[in-house]
Amino acid sequence: MHWLAQGFHGEMHYMEAHGLKRARPAELVPGTVSVITARMDYLPRGTPVDVPPGWQAMEFERLRRPDEAIVSVYARGRDYHKVLRARLQKLCDRIAQAVGPLGHRVFTDSAPVLEAELAKRSGQGWRGKHTLVLNREGGSMFFLGEIYVDMPLEPSAPVTAHCGSCQACMDVCPTKAIIAPYRLDARRCISYLTIEHSGPIPLELRPLLANRIYGCDDCQLVCPWNKYAQPSQLPDFDARAGLTGQQLVHLFAWDEPTFLRLTEGGPIRRIGHERWLRNIAVALGNALRATGDAGLRAALQSRAQHESALVREHVAWALAQRDFE
Image 1 (cartoon, rainbow, N blue to C red):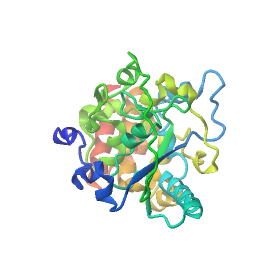
Image 2 (image 1 turned 135 degrees about the vertical axis):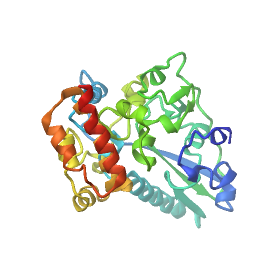
Image 3 (image 1 turned 180 degrees about the vertical axis):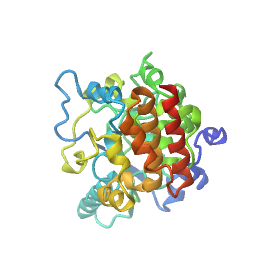
Image 4 (image 1 turned 120 degrees about the vertical axis):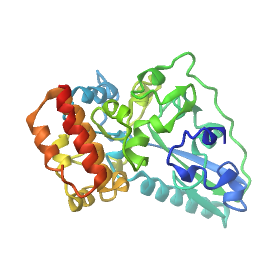
């Protein structure tokens, strides 16, 4: 409640819309007695977790290629909401077969549920200084899900925290969104700005987005515990063709039907074509400032008269970056 009162949630009004139901499961789903928590690894199959220089270094290397688009690792495959919710429901069915009728409801980032805190209290891991849940065997590269059930279960114990004096996540954050250990100002977070935020991206933060067009993984990439991150066993989270190593100018050329077709079933579709273009325009502006490439300028000029005022404004800003070459 203190975090909300300080406005750190930005435009995410849903975080305050349900009052304390978020912290009181039985108020959200009457009859709830216990909560089962789950986690699911999402690194794509084939991620070189044990091969030098390591997958984290490979991801950081993308920042050195300013004309390449960076999409957060979790968003390169199928929408995790669909995958995890379906598997949680199958688990409920198996539990019901064993114990009889089961009142339940499954969640994954889909309702007023304090997922990270429930995961922490149930022993899935501890809260890192970036506020994400960390697990000794899996780092933080996993999704969380919950099953609210109407049967009493023996509580599992929380685990101890193992961040110690490390603050690598705080130091690496491009926008300094982690304002103190365990305290995130979402309004400065690149994931928030490129996904949740619907309006203009603040001018002073645009250069800090670099070539990140959907989300940001830096605080996870730098975390020492993610050397233990495990690839998913599911093909669902394999990177879709065109979302890894793709040139900004190519993605900027997608019209809306193309955007909808190529993001169908994935999490990126939720931001819509307008915000997609907004984000890429900022990345193109940053690349233009870094390289002065005429092709980037031409791509931006192709959208200079776009029907969306939001897109036009970000394109105009991006074109002005050539003056800072």
